[in-house]
Amino acid sequence: MNALESIQELKSRMSASIIGQDQLIDRILLVLLADGNMLLEGLPGLAKTRAIKTLSKELDCGLSRIQFTPDLLPSDITGTEIYQPELKEKFVFQQGPIFSNLILADEINRSPAKVQSALLEAMEERQVSVAGKTYTMDPLFMVMATQNPVEQEGTYPLPEAQMDRFLMHVIISYPDDAAELEILRLNRSEQSKAKAEKKDRISPEVIFSARNEILGVNISENMERYIVDLVSATRHPSKYSEELAQWIDFGASPRGTIALDRASRTHAWMHSRKTVMPDDVRAVIHDCLRHRLILSYEANADGIDADQVLNEVVKQVAVVG
Image 1 (tube, rainbow, N blue to C red):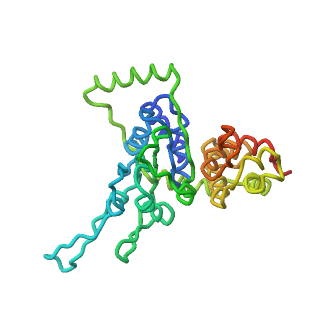
Image 2 (cartoon, one colour):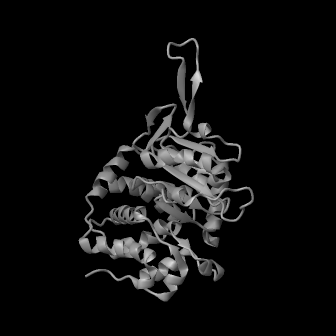
Image 3 (cartoon, rainbow, N blue to C red):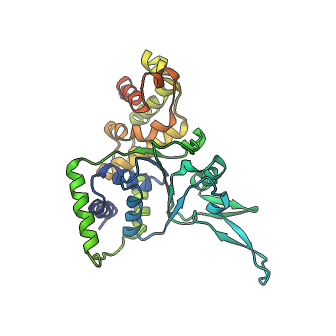
């Protein structure tokens, strides 16, 4: 199988275990292929943890789960130096759970900013600095952080600078009734099986091959300018409409432009296209930009959310040429 067929096989295996969350599966694979990190927002029980566990089970790679709590320390994530007097090198670095391939940062907003920031260097620079030494992460590395949108007591909202480092902010909701019935039957089936049939795990080399092919996906100058114009509309909304000017205080950063480019090229590749189309950009704009906008008091007072603002942005910005 080539890289695309292998990714489709991986997606098919995940879909067999995760019912009713096709968008979640699609976005996890997209972020992994785009070499980014993902913030996932959804109520408890919507298969957030199951999704990344299934990915690590089907892909030959490691998984670390970090449960964020108010008493968590940065060293609980990055690791620390241990004093061992019997060795020639007295202090030995013991790696923390961040040193894995897939990182589930569960309920990331349960810990204060000091702990949250322990993830920043690993997410952005793909390295960790402890006691003056730098330790490099594995080339296959992705953080999937989750947060509960409802229960906010005892939580610490993520700062804008940290939100900006996530390639995508994905929001998931309840499955429909038909999917719920399938979930019920799947759960019963899994309980009754003594041993599940084991398949060969997919090699991580497939991810690296796919990333190389994605780099070759063509994006025309018109599409580049379309991406720039979309981001510019969030920064200079008064040029486009009164509603946008009233709704937006601060627009997306250059990371938003880069995220749109990477995500749209990956989306095109996943749909067997060698050239980015406007539909590819529009398919990922909400997940790439919703967490990079700071809305005005008026927007919040009127119940306008980031997705509605981005709908207006897409409506106002035309494709160049």
